[in-house]
Image (cartoon, rainbow, N blue to C red; front, side, top):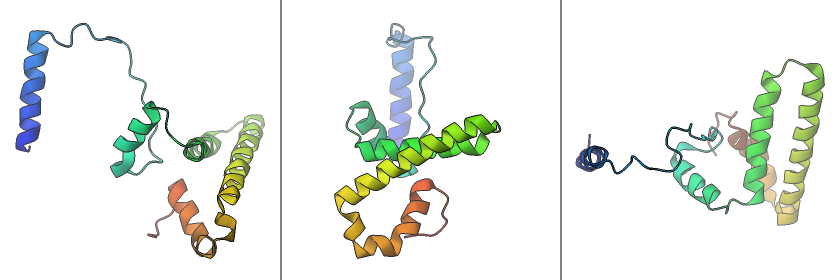
Length: 130
């Protein structure tokens, strides 16, 4: 444990003993945790900060939803539910592709060369390094 971690732990313990945390809003309620598996670990703090401030771009929200839908689709066993999930997933993927075109990536030669690796990286399924 680093010296900073040790100091932080001592300050937290002192605050607990003084009752500083006794009347916090939401006490006794479960935390609302987000699935951050699609966000690289070193970017999660910044991602959460932007998300809670409402500053995440729509493209990022779409990517997050696409990953979530892909996970649901892989776990779903009901054929009717799978069809609905596929439709929603396809619609989100088309919207994301349209946003990429509007951004000018369609004319970018480098994007075409690295497109599959970019998609693998964003979906978390690739093992290649860009």
